[in-house]
Amino acid sequence: MPKRVLTGQIVSDKGDKTVVVNVERKVKHPLYGKIIRRSKKYHAHDEANEYKAGETVRIEETAPISKLKTWKVIERVNTHATPERADIA
Image (tube, rainbow, N blue to C red; front, side):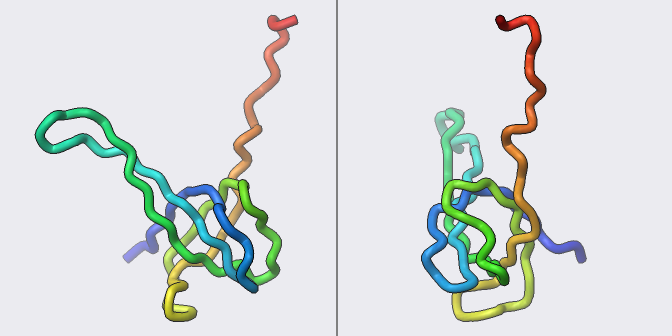
């Protein structure tokens, strides 16, 4: 069975070897049909303390590391990878 992978933004890097990642998803309201945002925070393992608050990262489910940590950070998502437009000058 493949491990779950989620993408979210780091909201806290205060813990030692731990970051808190806010994962946001959009769901359709069951009755009214409006698209609403739902978010959940996950504690993820960051072995080298290399990730900082505000960064967008990808996390992967793992075996439990501690009481709250069952995820680990696998990579930083480059959100600024959009190519420069030459026609805007």
